[in-house]
Amino acid sequence: MSYIICIASLISVPFTPLFLALPLLKLKQFAASGVLGLKVAYRIRQKMGGYYIGLTAKFAGTPLFPHGYQGVNISGDAVIGKRCVIFQQVTIGSNTLLHSSAFGAPVIGDDCYIGAGAKIIGKVTVGDNCRIGANAVVYKNVPPNSTVVAGGGMRIIEHERRLDNRFINAGASGIQYWDGDKFVPLDESDVSKC
Image (cartoon, rainbow, N blue to C red; front, side, top):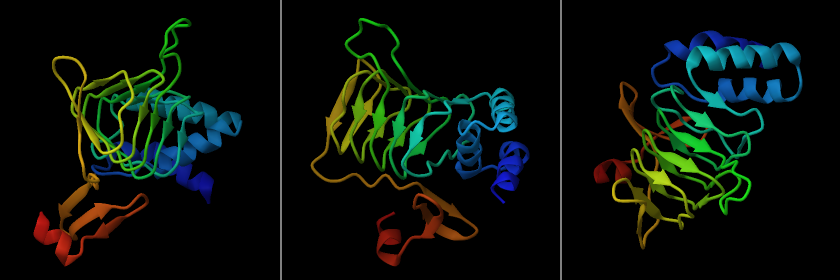
C-alpha cells in the first residue's frame, strides 16, 4: 500500500493545487531506507519539481506546502516541528563553512509559519509558534512566539501571547484549518474572530 502512495505522489503532486506533503514525505522515507529504485524515483521527482528535501531531514509531523514545493530547499540535517506551514521558494539550509560559528542546520519548532522566499540558514533555532515573513533571512536564534520581518537586517518582533499560525482554507467545504495531517472545520467561536 505504501508503495502505491509513493508512486502516486510522483504523478499527482504537480497537478494538485493545495496538496499535502504526506505522499512526498512517504516517498522520501522509503528512499532513505535504502531501496535503490525509490531513491532514484525520489531524485527524479525532485528534479522535475524544482525542489530539494534532503533524504535525512527530520519532520516531527506532516508540514503543509500551500503553494507547492517549487523552489523549496530543505537541508538533510534540518529538523522541522509539527504543523509547520512552508510557502514556495523557502530555503532551510545548512551552513557548511567549517570555522563558522553557525556551522550546522536549522531546527524549526512546532506551529511555525514560514513565508514565501524566506531563508533560514545555519545552526539556528526557530522557537515554537513563530512567523518568518516573506523574504526574511534568519541567521540567529528566534525566541518562541516571535515574528521575523525582512528589511534592514534581521528584525525580530517578540509577542507576549502565543501566535495562532494555523493555515486557514476557505473553500467549498467551509472554513477549515490545517491540523498536521488533515483539514479540520473551524468552530463558531474561531470563525467569528476571522
